[in-house]
Image 1 (cartoon, rainbow, N blue to C red):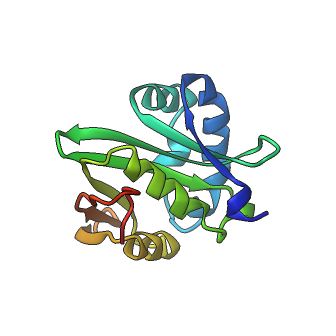
Image 2: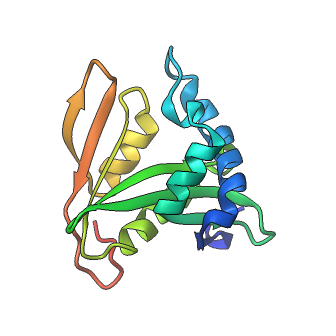
Length: 161
């Protein structure tokens, strides 16, 4: 399946259970990179549902209606949004779905710069964020986290490079 056949749609509280299941499946591979439990895998379904309810959430869905990816964001300052839980099922990775989700969530906040973070061992994530115009803001070696920032992009699509 190509990313062209994937639709990016708004998600909401009614999707919380399916999004939580996606989170557990998608982050399982990330979890194996670290010798300790990572937050996406320790978050409870109730905690995820509460985060989904207060966030702008997008989902990636196949033509057949299968949920294969998602991303969340909230406005944390008037000109900044925090992007979180960018996830794609392992079988659908490498097809541009993560890039499309990231671009779409940025477009949902066209007047904002974006912040996000990932683990320092998550090399595919780091490559994606750098390729999408993010720059490293800081690295927390002790927590094994790398923080990225991207200034607002004022283009017709809202997702420039």
